[in-house]
Every structure is written in C-alpha cells, then in structure tokens.
Length: 354
Image 1 (cartoon, rainbow, N blue to C red):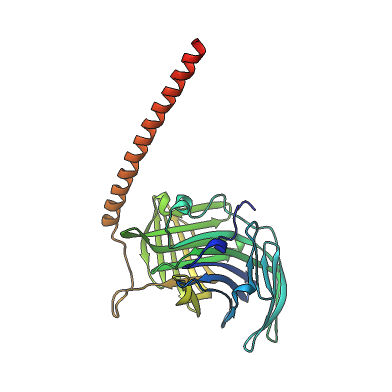
Image 2: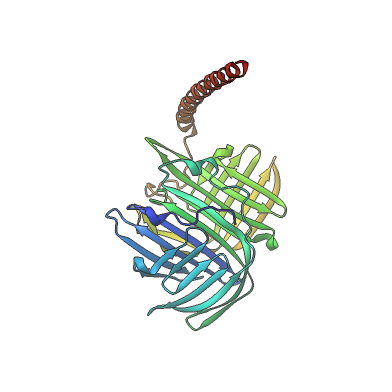
C-alpha cells in the first residue's frame, strides 16, 4: 500500500477526530464497523466503535488508553477488536451485543491518486476524506449474538475521515458489486467552508467494468442537486445521478468540533438507483441493493422544497478573485526565481572565464 501515514491524531491536542469505515457484504447481510478516535474542545480524548447491521446499530464507548492506531500501516486496535489490511478480529461483549469472529481480506483495489486531489494540501479543511479500498474479497464468519453470518464470497470497502467536524450539509453514497459485480462507486457532495465563504464541492470515484471515472470539484464538476434522497453531479459531458429508493435508516453519531455529539442517519443496506450519462448516452442505469446512502441537510425549513441548488455565480466570482491572487503571487515568484538563476549563472560563468 502506498500511503505514507495512516494515523494523524497522535500529536493533536483538541477539536480532532479520525475514523475508519469498514463495510462487509455477503449478498444478504451488511455489517459495518466504524472505529474512531476523538479529542473534544477541552482536550479530552475518547474512542468509540459503532457496529451497523441491516436493522440495528450498536455504539460501544472505550477509554482512550484502549485505543491504538499505527502510523506506518493500516492497523487499529480498540478494546479487543483489531482492524488491519489483512482483515479484522472482533470480540465484543456488552449487554446488548455479543459479537465474535474473524474476517480475512483479499488484495485491496486502491485509487491511482488521492480522491481529494489538490485539496488534500489545503489547510484548515473541516474534513479530509480517503478511500483505502474500493473493493476487496472478504472471507470468514462473524457470530452476531446467536446468529452466524458467513462471508464465503463476500466483498468489502474501506474509507476514512479525519478533521474537526463533518460538513454541515452533505450527501454520501457508496455501492460495491453492483450490476453483477461490474459497478463500484463512492460519491459525495458537501458544503465546504474556506475562510469567509463556502462552496458546494464534490468528489466521486466510479468504476464500471473496465471504465473508471473521477468526478470532482477540482476537475470542474458541479453539484446540480443534493437532497436527502437524491444527488446529481455534472462534469463537462458527464452526468451522474443517485436516487435513494428504499429506505433503511440507522442512527449514528458523528463528530462536531472533535466530540461525537451529532446525530446522523445512514442507510447502510438500502436500494439506490445509479445512472451515468456520457455525451447524452446512457453508460449504465442500475439499481443496487444493498447500497449505502447518507445525507444531513441542515438549515432546511419545514415545508421548503428539499432540493438545494448551489448559487454558482457568487461562488465563481469569489473563486476567480482567489485564482487571480494566486496567479499574481505565482508570477512574482517565477520572476524572482528567474532573476536568481540568472545571477547564479552569471557568477558561475564569470568564475569559469577566470
């Protein structure tokens, strides 16, 4: 695996979270694990493991000393549970949940380059997203209370988030092994605050057969619709649509200023229709079950149309001003660099003549 750093929270002091999302499917059952580490505004550390099944969610709190994450590789231990690139080992014993078992992972299908693109280097971002594996094989058995769940030919997906808070407004969806195993995707749209203003950004990675598509704000993509049930992204001659059809919401906790104090609802095993158009031609029109769909649209009044459209004109004006500033700084830097090289070359030429 190519990442240089797998855990960033070691030196953080306050208002920070880092969490992983491990998803496992076997065709009829979906089991997700979300181990997370957090530091609130007062600097108090904590850890949590959220377990999502088809029809239930469990939240287990741990002391900070019961959490460990390696910096040089994908390895996270929380209580008696271990999550790594080789697989997971689960041992949970609470009043509500008894869960035990091991799952082995196959080779990860990684992205060629970071999903955040140039935004990964932007300081003061609320949340940074990473895709660790778009898909991989899963084999093993988990015992959930009295039920045994087998993953003989299962599939998995892994991503992570880190920062201070989840975006105030966002929509996220994910699907593995759709269209008979040909479709794998992750797409998200969110309001991103940058200094005194904010804009609606998007990232999406779509694999369909041998075709791979990257839709992102830094590639020119725009969010046309982002609601609790629907997301539409357009980039040049490409249009992507995701429509939630069958709901199965589960209540989760999400970070706000480092602390897990925000309620969100994820449809971890729901039905979503995905459509992709290129030059007006339908590339695929697939209904995926189970798929994941999560949305938190804040600031929406009762009775208001839930479809939120971005005011691109104002955002474009502000972005143009920032681009012009960067261009001026870049040109000044280039001029100074050329002057410096001319001076060095003249000095070197003078010495060689002597």
